[in-house]
Length: 151
Image (cartoon, rainbow, N blue to C red; front, side, top):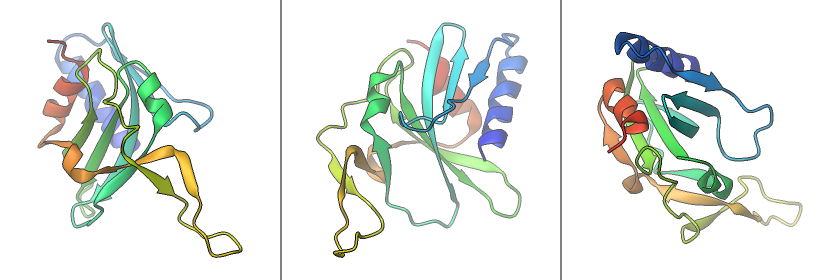
């Protein structure tokens, strides 16, 4: 899904005549983002989440370090399992150029597997953000706009 998402963003950048989008990936996954995408003067640190259209996931886990990155955000991509068509998209973040909303007050995530004593330990740097906190966008054009259009 990541490659399809990147391809769609590249097509929109090229179609707009800008052709200025740059994409990078971190070597280590410990700061809460999967991609760094820059378009013109906007740099987005993006955590990607993906789910098929019939998925019932009610929340996502977000690393607090993402809030320390310029224009950090989460893009939750829904996709059609048969066609790989992308959309709708859920977005959690600020406007282009703005930081991720404060997530320190959200519930602390727990490990999915229990330790030897049967306890699922807390993950103090990870917060659980409910689906209702995300903004829905129907197509790639809308998510491109929210990612890179400044007010």
